[in-house]
Image (cartoon, rainbow, N blue to C red; front, side, top):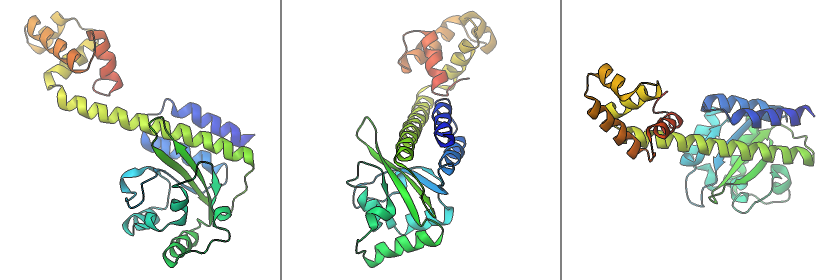
Length: 241
């Protein structure tokens, strides 16, 4: 029951989360309730592609992460290969049982085991755009029932969706900053503070018509229909406070 409640608290909390590091710690705490000591939330690269640009949140040992990326282990990792076709959560040891591994694949699993990642659970995920990702959880031993796997599936889905939203918001903010001029952002900021065009003009030592022009231009660039909506879009994208 405590595991379920911690997962529900996590799901509720991340809907308001905008800080990646804080979300990383929240996810670390909730998977820890299920006995997992490390995790990786990442997109699933197509065969032949490196994993570098797909990683969303890493709770792996930093040295192991750097080695995994540098050696391009995703190409020989048997768990990564299984993810190319998996749709349901699976335990590493269960899918590895009876398999004959190549020397490179065995080396990956041995090195992971040496740092405590002896077994794990992979939770395959898919977003509305069809992009595939996974919440990969690792521990020395695993003690889960079917209900736990379902709960962790929910945790992974919500974490993935929130990270995608945060990345998209940052991208929009970066694009908007490159589009809006400093004066447009300044006028929009004063508008958000409740100032009229006349007041903004006096503060910035501009004419009222020039001030209106800056606000109208910012509104148009942000795809808004009026200055009130432009302020809302600016706040959402992190352009103004």
